[in-house]
Image 1 (cartoon, rainbow, N blue to C red):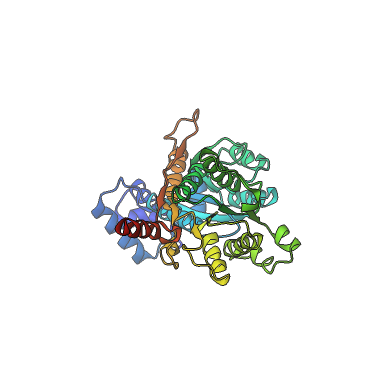
Image 2 (image 1 turned 90 degrees about the horizontal axis):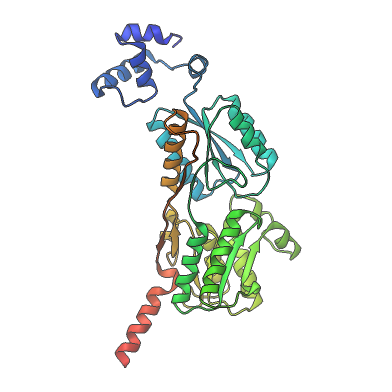
Length: 369
């Protein structure tokens, strides 16, 4: 309906301030008044002109998300939480995808600026390229928050100690008696995300005085798979990349005959690929090979056997990123300090690691004794 906010407010018998607060979802409106205004707006078929509003107020009530090129399960949970929390606070969300390259980030940021977003959430990929494009965005007076740190760039951040999480996963397997533990990670290896996974794995082995064997570590990259004539080159660049990476890495570790009895995987999706490869090679999980993942995605509960994993608080990370960003946009945070909020993780033990099998074996031994 082509009608101004002033005309709508007059027809509804409310002030323009009250109408605006209802339109942006502000909690500072009586519930009964809100319901009446929303009902009558529906009858008017009124759609507010956000562009006109932003030109007047200098705010678009829109948050930008600079996201990764591939939508993995963990990222979708974050994006859903971002959308829901932003909507609850009266903001819209626009997503621009980036492959993590300088060109991808520059294109995505330009796209978000063209939509006059009030701030952006960067879903980091952990790549270590220069952050000039993010600094340029800040020079427009727009705040940025990242989910996981952006290399060499200072901004608000919501994060999780990935290295500590992978150390706990590996330490748990060591506690079950495993000494030959494999690690399946994915390209690019220069990503801080990948490095922190490998760091945590190595820290656990070092603390247990177990030698680190490079033969037990596989990084599934398109270059390495291609060089060895693998069948998964195209898959590593597709939507099922993590599954293919886990499958190929597990095949490679089995082929090396390195005595692996347990496998730590970079994600639940990688672990699912590992389960498939183990089955194809005639190995029983967890009897012949213990497998653990990372994320605690919904599907991890329904694999055969169900996955032991680290629960990454993906929805909470998205929600907190929105809360902090809106607080920054609306001037409720001091400009002199950046917020860094580290959320907790939790080890979720299921059947794929062999803990239940080990407890049964221990019980049988105690009965026979």
